[in-house]
Length: 262
Image (cartoon, rainbow, N blue to C red; front, side):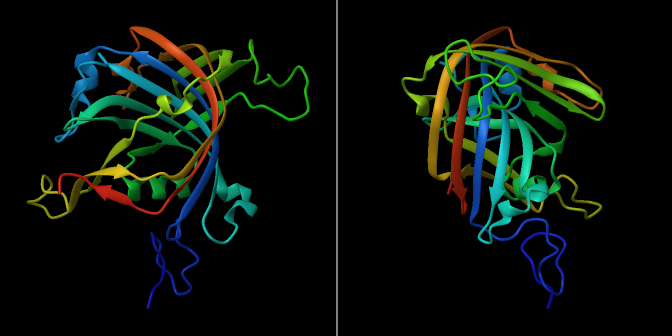
């Protein structure tokens, strides 16, 4: 019997891209909140979510430098376990609950893409980079302190798609307020000739980020630009104004998602 959790299934079950959960994550985040045209934000929402009228088109952009592990110290294989990611989170509502919706997300690692599709994150390949902090002080590393400056960028298929800068001012008074519960759409199409519009799986799910920890959360000013490119719709959510920029470290564990509307 072939073994594994994701493709490719194999005789020993070691060739699959992503092993079975639990999945553990730790990462450093450079983020910027901004406001886009509310109609453009609403156009990204799937059936079951509605615009958050009180947010008026608010979006949060996250650039993340991640390290991953399952249950067998996978972090000791850094080529596989480390990756960079960019995502947009649009404010929305599920019934009366404020949530965030992820219309676009990019990663530079095929293992991360496989895990993302299982969870409902619509991941595409991209190249993501951000300023890092190092324990040894020096002019090549900003400090987590007032005046610390961070940059981040995203490109895909040879096109620049996003650039951001953040200048820190103070520790966040309420770090958890930066993050809403995240809703995703698990979508796997059918390949039957007459059923392209009838996907095999199409369900809204709530991400379950267990044991989430936040550390070294600093806020300040932020700026972000989204650039148009062929084959992309990221720039349709271009900022009309920006808000808080932030830098944070976060860890959590994923064991499941919760199907919504049942």
